[in-house]
Length: 223
Image (tube, rainbow, N blue to C red; front, side, top):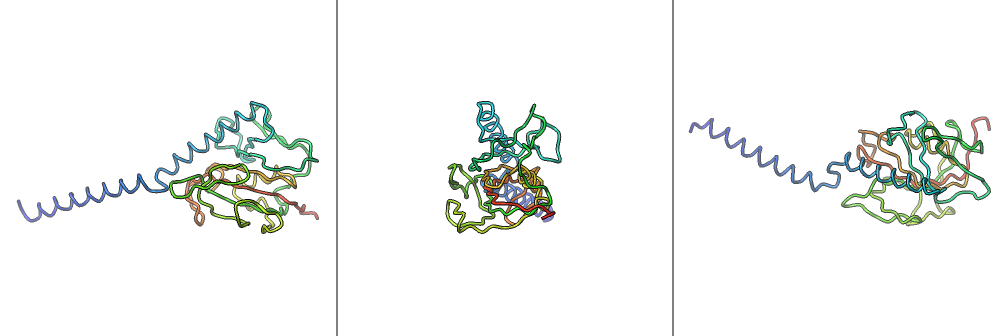
């Protein structure tokens, strides 16, 4: 066997060994197959919300993105679980005929309004990051942003920020347009309405965004 042949064989063996090692590492990595796992995760949340709504629950909503109109694509929807709401407000929003949203005509922000909110953001549970979020006791993953300390929201101590919906990702903007002052929602935003294939800080590409949002108040652009 020539020296060149031996070198080629050795290179092939090294390449195969590295490839096998990489594959082994990938399959056990925290974000292995992250896109597919997020697709499955969001579909499970979508189906849970659908069942709750079909059973008459008024604590779950499916809100279609204001930029979309394809009802057959579940990833066009943001899923909402109501944690708190102002009891003086009679009714909120719904999906009519499963193809469009309605706004009940009460005070909701417009896209250019200034919303005073506090929030916490997580990705879906993963092998290294899984905690129980209060008050609905659900499993969430890595916390990429928070405006309060501790497990539960303390409205007296939380940091509130003024945010204009139009400057947010598509799913977050859509959610704010349907909230009333006093609403606290757990929202599930599919990655197609979030950062899609891009990362943002510590947020991985193809991540479902799970937010706990409390809207304290908002000011219209005119005011």
